[in-house]
Amino acid sequence: MAAVSGPGGGARSPLLDDVVNGAVDHRGQPVRRSSSGGWTSAGFIIGVEVAERFAYYGISSNLINYLTGPLGQSVATAAENVSAWEGMASLSPLLGAFIADSFLGRYRTIVIASVVYIAALGLLTLSAVLPSLRPSDCQTAENNSCSPPLHQVVLFFFSLYLVAIAQGGHKPCVQAFGADQFDGQNPQECKAKSSFFNWWYFSALGLFLLGTKTYRFSIKGGERSPFLRFLNKALLAPDGSEDGKICTFSEVEEAKAVLGLSPIWATGLVYAVVFQQPITFFNKQGVTMDRSIRPGLNIPSASLQSFIGIGTVLFIPIYERVLVPLARAFTGRPVGITMLQRIGIGMFLSITSMVVAALVESERLKTARECGLIDKPNATVPMSVWWLIPQYVLIGVSDVFTMVGLQEFFYDQVPSEWRSIGLSLYLSIFGVGSFLSSFLVSAIEKATGGGGREGWFANNLNKAHLDYFYWLLAGMSALELIAFIYFANSYVYNRARQS
Image (cartoon, rainbow, N blue to C red):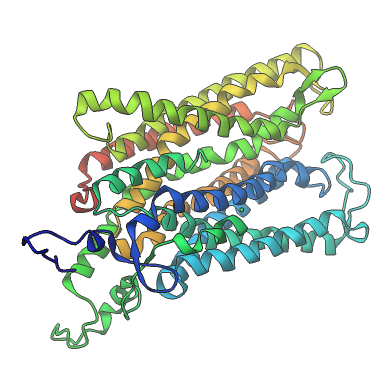
């Protein structure tokens, strides 16, 4: 927009200064900075994310116990199913981001995905509460004859995967739409955008809709997503002419930049495997331990997963108020450390969490042996469940570094038209990592179990060796960190987007 001079010449109109370039409101009209965007709009979007996370983690944190309990699956099979579902939930955002960026836009995709989400949660509830759909007496995972009705299992898994699909439309768009509420060309809003990725973790469909009149909607041209245009490169004439304007030089360079993110993407996969452990084996460990708060009152083992969130929420202010200023004094960078340095620190913390988990599990097994509980899988091991808290908290603190760093990295280092896809690439790390975790558990179970042997993931955890598995993950994570450091040192940031 051209500058408008006042009577004295050279003075820009305050009204034009208040207009945000490249954005419109929900009616398609030019949007004013003073009445849209910023933390006001981001607050509504964070609100709907909080509600969605309550629903998602309410399912994921209890899923392995439901599979090994009412559905009667073995520990290994249940862990594989949890990881497969998590993988689907993390990979489906690739499709959701494509639909949002190419067809519907982020706002409409969020609304439609939320409606599907609500329907899926309703069906999931029906599969558990309707008498005609409840499984018959199914007491423990040790009861191999436990066989719930087929229709109950089908409805349960259909509802479960519908949740995963709905999240695919919700997850990549909500965060990108939230970051869109900050104008990267405005110095104050650009600084707030960096903090937005941190406070995203700190902070329902109705709340999101209330903010409609204040949102900024990015103006899109008539063309399809540049990602599609890049794929059409093969349609160029043999002489290399670009008569159809199918793909410009800048689009090719942007696509190459996105492909350049693949080493960072690949070196996050083992971290994603570690990320699966709190909702699978950490949870099952807790079931065997002393969970009493007072006589007659035990805490659910799944509730310990709240310490991941507690660790994250408590550490974010420390990171923002203490670590960033301290690092800034040494590096001279406004954000203290680079995005890749932040990711690497979190990977190191994830290694520490696996080492702690292995040591705690070794102590639990030792206690079970000393108390003669090896052949008593349902007995409570006289070791407090609070011993598991450090490994949960370390996972939470590592999230502040690695997960938030990955989010910002994949949002920041892709073209603006690809930002939903960028965030879905970040989520796909955890999708592929979940499938990798499922494959790893299956392979180890086949290698260590069978033939009358008790494998690493025996249903009787007092005979299992989860400690070996944690040591294996610690070693794999250490190798991953070495590879990450190698690729990070050679990575060249897109400085234009960083600024």
